Length: 116
Image (cartoon, rainbow, N blue to C red; front, side, top):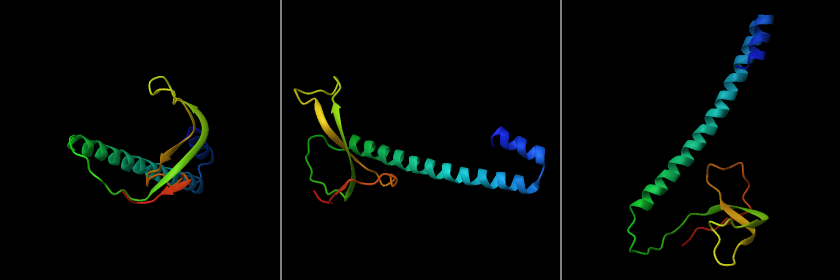
């Protein structure tokens, strides 16, 4: 709880003020918990993807079926940095990002259909 709120309680010493402060703090904690749980799920999925990739055979090509994926397109003039620059393809009019299930706050620009 921030010091100004604690100070306000001790100046007034009112039970209702303390209840209001504690309820507000409880709400803030619940919001932070939800954000942390979302981040934890994202990290777990990424770790799972890395583990899967580490154990796949390198000498075999497979066709996989992917689920429908939400996409966010960012239109902007981008220049590739030196470490990723290939040939003369160093300018881009936009990029797209695949959104994760845990990113509901970003509206999808489009949807890639499920398929191979």
